[in-house]
Image 1 (spheres, one colour):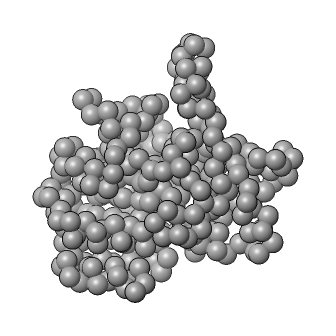
Image 2: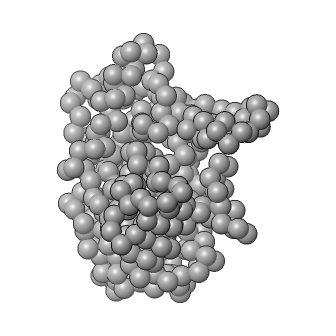
Length: 288
C-alpha cells in the first residue's frame, strides 16, 4: 500500500479530516484538539501525513506551552537552540517576535539548523499574535526540487557534499558585542559540517535537495566560482511556485513541517505590525 493510501485509510479510521493545499505539499488537519492527549493511532496517522505532505497545519489550537511541548515530544527528543532567544522558563521553546523595533529576518529559503551535525527532524510552530494582514509562511517541496532537475545535474550532485555553517548567527554575535572567546567557544561546539547535497529521507527513502542559502557555504572539492554558480542554481529551485504552498496565519494556528524534505520562507511584509510565534524543534539525524 502506498503512503498516500495508508494516510487516507488512517485519516478515515481516526475520524479527523485532512485537506490538501496543493497536489504536492501542505495539508490542513481539522477535527483534532491538541490540548488533549493524542492516541497512538492518531499520532501514527499524523506522522504519515507529515511524511506525505511535508508540512501539516492545524487551526484554532488554544494550547498551553506545556501542551505544545508535550505534542512535539511525541515525535522525538527536543532540541535547544544555542543562539535564538527562548521563552522564559522553557529552553526548548524559541520565542520569535518581530515588531516595529525588530523587522522579520527569516525571509530566505532555508531548512532549519543545517549547521548542526544532526539537523532537526522538524518543527512545530504556533502563532501567538499575528498581524491583521501579511506575515505568511511559504513552504517548498525539496523532493520535487530534486526530482525535476535535469539528469546531468542529478549526476553532477548526487555524490557531492556541501559545507554548512552558522555564519549568520556568528555575525549577530559580533554585532551584539560578544567576545572573541565566546565566539570561539561556539565555533568549537558547532564546527562547520559536511552534508550531502542530495539527502535520502530516513523514513521515506526519497531523495531531496539539501542545500539552502541561509547556511550552506560551498560544495566540497569544487572550484569556488563553479560552486557558487551551482549553488545559486540549486537555491533557486525552492522559489519555483509549483513546488510551494503558502499558509496565512491566524492566532492559535500551528504548522508542523518536516525539515528533511522541505524548506520554508517567512514573508517579512508586515512591519511595523507585531508577529509573535513560539517554535519547538525535534532533534533529527545525520543526513546521508
